[in-house]
Length: 154
Image 1 (cartoon, helix red, strand yellow):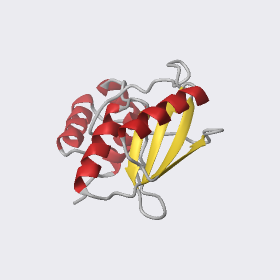
Image 2: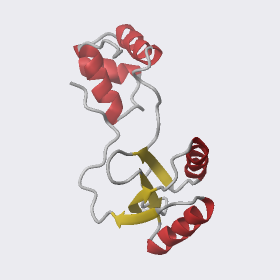
Image 3: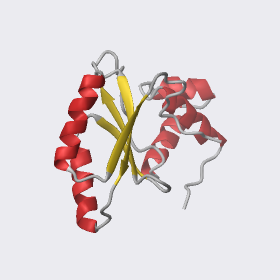
Image 4: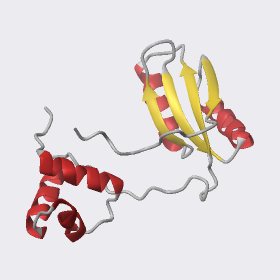
């Protein structure tokens, strides 16, 4: 069931998704709400599981991993043991910043961050030695047109 949120909650969510480092006073000022009322609403959003974490976003270029790669995987095995092992392997690889089980022609999509093509090659070799895969292919991101962690709040 989707938690009920009103227009004030939506305003708070839009603000915090852009900058969670703002103080309660700064958020309250932007939505013309008292500090205490704003704090209570923010706390309620956390308690209800609408707000799940406060994180800092880092610049991939500054951290030496500017190349984003979309890795497409097909598996010939779909048994539970393989799946548990795949989860463990993917979770243990810090280059994987997103992992998704898919419908359609491919089974999994990985979002991977590496320094360069040579870095991807090392990642690829490490992955295929740790996991039996039917097919793996990659597409290198040439341009990030839109990248956001903010969810639509309508």
